[in-house]
Amino acid sequence: MIFTDAFWDTRNLGVRTAELKFDANETVPVDEIARAIEGYEYIVAKVPQQSPLTLKLMQDAGFTFSECQINFRHDLQDLPERQVLPTGSIMTHRLTRNEDVILEQVGNGLFNSDRVFLDPAFSQETAAKRYVHWIEDELERGNPLFDVLVDDELVGFFAYKEPEEHVSYPYLIGLFPEARGRGLGKALVIESLIASKEQGCTASSTHVSSNNPPIIRCQESVGSRIAAMDYVFVKHQ
Image (cartoon, rainbow, N blue to C red):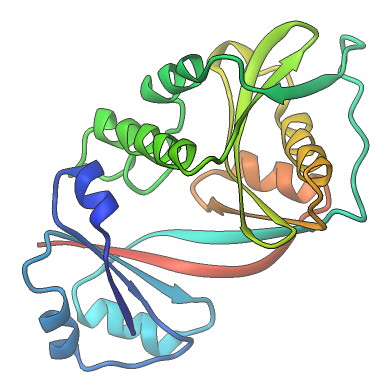
């Protein structure tokens, strides 16, 4: 069991937060978990798939299942072509010209399927603020934001970093509300992969929540493959 004081989410959520990471089928005495998380108000635990012993441990320790976190990976040697949209247009991207536009959209609740948004212990405003802070932190580290356009219309964005050499991590991908319902999701994922290739990466990796079936379908439709999956449990105390 790896214990992490999640100070970033303590700031984001306003409650003292910790994360636990388990190996496959790892078992730890319940009282050891209790000692590790003493004094913390919100605890997130991640358990690899096919770990029935650890899943039983989570129940015994009073954790509640929240979501599956799915890691998709894409070999950029097999890069899909840009889609021609029903209007005859194509989607393009550029380094953002106005970070505040993206941050405002995110702050208004652009993402509504993650474990924090769906947790009644937190407000939707808190869930949105968590994403805003995440983007701001990555911008301070020098990781870019990209605008996504159809013709000259700004329809969405993706946020980008490279945690491994030559492996991109588009950690947030979003369509703005006025662009939804137009069949742009697949094109948006493709655009993030094209940008990754342009940055010199050979592979792209990202995580999505099982609470968000549309992005799962989009990832699968462009040829991304599931590389790993964790069960995510939470506990309030």
